[in-house]
Image 1 (cartoon, protein in one colour):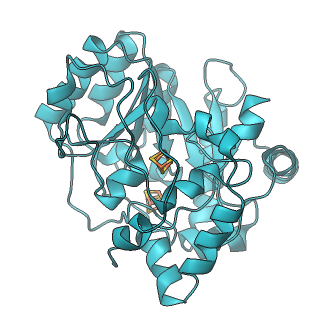
Image 2 (image 1 turned 90 degrees about the vertical axis):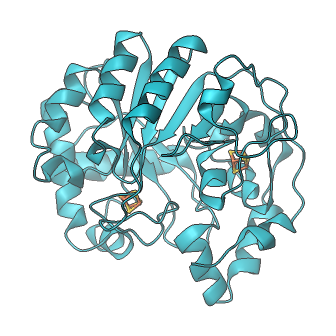
Image 3 (image 1 turned 45 degrees about the vertical axis):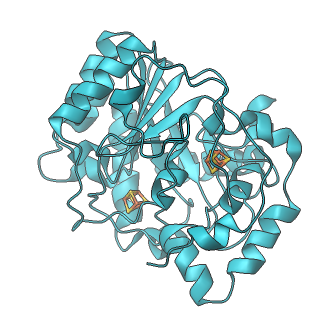
Length: 323
Ligand code: SF4
Ligand code: SF4
């Protein structure tokens, strides 16, 4: 894997500072039952990095002390972490909204047979990657058998009320196959709903449309194919200042499996740690009594992936999300 930070750091991006923190995104480890081509965390079945119990304890303490409104749990396949269910239960007991970044196929992995019931019982929002409604496109990006497994996963969630019950939101995530800007969110969501509904009887709430980030496996492949500069230029040409106000690093911090803190998940993957008072490698335990409002965000060229065109945040297109 190439170190892309020097390339990205050489590209100027407008200064950003933090607003009020309301969302804690926790990456509980890189183990995953899949190894998708575009994966920005480079996850897979052989990764061994896992959040330990003491770090999970700090996450729970932080949620309480900083009055966090949303806990966004990601990975790898976050459900594989031994503390996943404890984090969910503790956050829900404190009235915190919980999002599970679920890859759908995890729902039928051995040992996860009761996962759909657990998620539904705790009112967890499921955010699931589904890069296309066509089998070939999904499997080119995410591996053979993933499309059928994803459809079975969506059906299992629908059977528990997901996508129908307002307390059980089921949202899908789309990202383009290659170095192109994503299409409009509203039109694509309508297509997804029509095809998945008519052909598979599946219902869901929203489609979040995200640009591919030029980092990790996807970014390295762009460099190898000589497409990195062209893709970065495409993102920069499509940048809109209006999207700067809605980028997720303004109200979210991202914590890695060891408890180190970053301005977002993408910075985490680049090893670009949050800076506080001139210090890098800040840990969540150091911030229990700290208000980060006004703190500068570490930005670089990849940030154009958040501000190009309709913009991308963890909640999909910024422009359409605001409408
Ligand atoms: S399912 Fe998600 S975390 Fe796992 S390899 Fe694919 S993109 Fe990465
Ligand atoms: S990648 Fe996006 S969310 Fe992360 S620091 Fe840059 S603008 Fe903010």
